Length: 150
Image 1 (cartoon, rainbow, N blue to C red):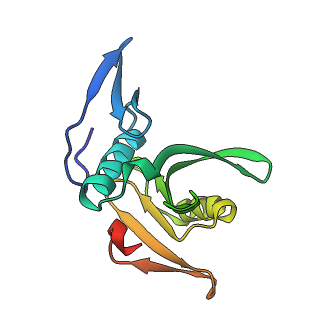
Image 2 (tube, rainbow, N blue to C red; image 1 turned 90 degrees about the horizontal axis):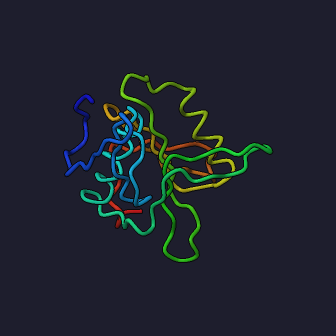
């Protein structure tokens, strides 16, 4: 896998039946190491270790209903009080460009969850915005906020 624009971490991998697996600290199990999963694991460790997001409030592969269809958010941060979703992260493989279609995808998830923050990353480029519901627009931020700033 290629180096990403994210801090390194102690990666745990194993091999089963000829496939490489990476340990997902949130799901507490090994999962297939795909380019998107490579980005997810780096980004989750970035959020936990560098941005101080509590691992207990984060979840990967969160299922939701969207227009009668089951979809999965790549990662979701929940609020301490009441467990309402606060932030959605959508990951793409490093070779996938971040386009309007990616923002449309995460916006559709947000239609169902109505969170405060959206993040999109392919491991090389990261975009974070705070939702301004009163102004009906996203406000793009220079950086992913530390958990204490949410």
